[in-house]
Image 1 (cartoon, each protein chain N blue to C red):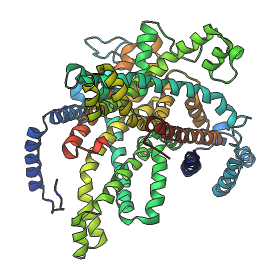
Image 2 (image 1 turned 60 degrees about the vertical axis):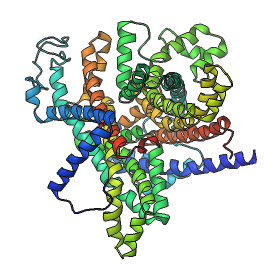
Image 3 (image 1 turned 180 degrees about the vertical axis):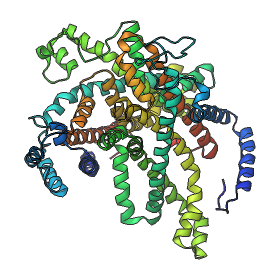
Length: 338
Length: 299
């Protein structure tokens, strides 16, 4: 247990340079590139005096190095600063939007595992058959489909043509969000209150966006599961299990898949940054009020502190998931010790 | 693969390439066909960019090509969009944009990433550690978000979007080349070169680089496939190119606005084109990978 703790601490410390580097990159890029929040705010024709006044107010007239040090100082106190455009803390819109993104990514990941792993097992068990070929073809094509186009096609087919699912937002307009929302996680909120109608509505809105993410990301899991299963099914303990007369289903799932899962868990961590990127596009396609939409909105407004804040949160998110995946690894594979 | 760096002569190069093709076609049958399919797709789309008027008689910006938002018909095989432009013409002329940006971005990232990777792996020490840390940080961060930040700050434009996409793939090249350099550095023939007193620059350019290049070709092709989707994503969210340049991603975002009215052709065809182009480069890359270095993609 002490080893685990020291491992976790090391990992957390190692995440700091990554966040720091991303932050520095974004900070410098934002300020070196043309375009600034003052002209975005006041429009191109504001008098020079007003512009200078506003810049002074926001501290934009100071040298970049001084602005940077000031920002880092605040960050060390866990303060993301204030928005330059709206009278609000940067953390306020982020905390509002984060649950929406979390719900979407979580369900997207579950969907991609739920599609990818069974299909991969199926392909491996019927190696070189038509089914195997079809599964591999699916994996390769799906991998080349842009997330947003997948979303648009699902919207067209299941939303517009069949009318089965809504194509925008997290809830129906008739639903009073304020009546149940407390944590921002609508699934938890509605379940906590036992409001099944609202819960159903929330889930109903989640289907297409998470399916979009799930299908696109499932390709890689099909390939990986198939390759690992083929390796595992060739091993001696599978032969031994079969020789003992254990039913084939049990051999494949209990003995085979459990061992094939280990590299898949690693992949899960690596895929997570793809998932986050995909979530931005999915949010944009499905008008999903999450962090991605917040980022895009604030980019157009040149709201530096909020953009930086969102980037920091994304970096934290990626680091946290990769840590979690490493720990999960130990839980699945008893040979791994920290 | 050639181990030593020989003087390059075009005639001998083509002859050896030809011999290599015939040999590999027999040895790797499936991979060869996958690669060929990729090449066919890519060549067709490249032909579109070179001779667009052969593929369509409409102009991509002609706002009187047909009726407004008409479904595919014999005169307009992919229908017309909300500004009465021919969708197929938009596809043909838009190919140049996405292909150009993706290839330029992938090459640019290779030009920056490869030398840095070579140097970092060869020199080692603090230089290597710091550079690796920076590259790993960028690599582990979602690439699209980085590209969005760059594209937004640079503003619309062909060169700007190319730069924004290129940033994403620099760490990919860096990590790959650095890893290869680290292992090749220990090979006997490098030691031999050192023993006969070859200068460091010579060892790097004549002994290590030629052996790295095979994997780079594979990764380059896969990166182009990925860059195609990144470019499309950037223009889809409106960070790509100025209006007026035909672009598949932009057409998709336009089609999205009219989706509720069921104009399926406006979103279907640009997407199919993006998938085809990305698939072409993926097939080329995976075929090459299997033939040049079977273990590369397993890692």
